[in-house]
Length: 297
Image (cartoon, rainbow, N blue to C red; front, side):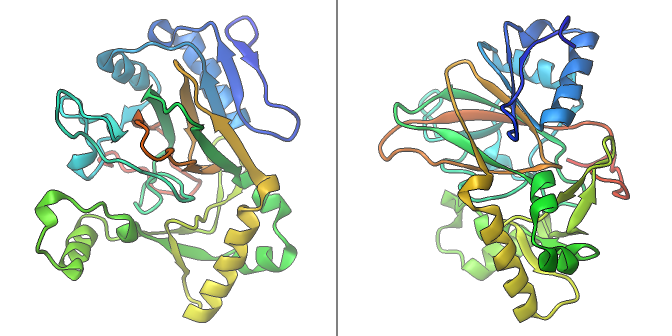
């Protein structure tokens, strides 16, 4: 490993390895294998000093798997649908993507039958004020979860959906909320997953719930489900469990959605921010027992 990559591991008990002096545009099979190993061991990898064109960014992501095309096209880059744009900065004078994404705890595509394996994020415009992504290690969270909550979730399944985070578009003027929700659910009806999943490569168990997308524990009354989930969400959000990773110019972040939940720190009022996300399916089931869909978007 040390002969391939210059790696700074996370501090004890933390997540997130850092890689310097590596141009991701020129990596070969040895570097790809080493990075895959880093992701499995450290869950998050930060690459410093990157400089991609849009085409180079997509080509790099393809080295690791199949890039996702997000199911709602107003998030797409106008020339590259593989790039999910989170931005309040015009491109060629036109609005592009969606501003203010991901300000809640979630795991990407948790509300689809085949969730998104990996997420790359590459900032294009960074605010002058503080800007970071926050993470919770869900392997550690499952180990540390109080026993009474472990008993509730050990063999449970949860239902996840994203309709509450639909971003209203100009074409939605004069349309009823009920109509918009029905249209969204036709595209994304939600998905059921185990509350605790097993990593297909490492065998680690991870808690797989999030305050943003997990709506209920299946088979429980509404009251019981909400009571348990609210207690779990409060546990996950405790400051001691939250890892903050600030953004810098030239950074690229890569993380695994099987073992982390994340959220944005938000953007200081009045400042510009633009980041390009590429989600990648890594070619193996999301968790042991999860069906691998070759046609997943």
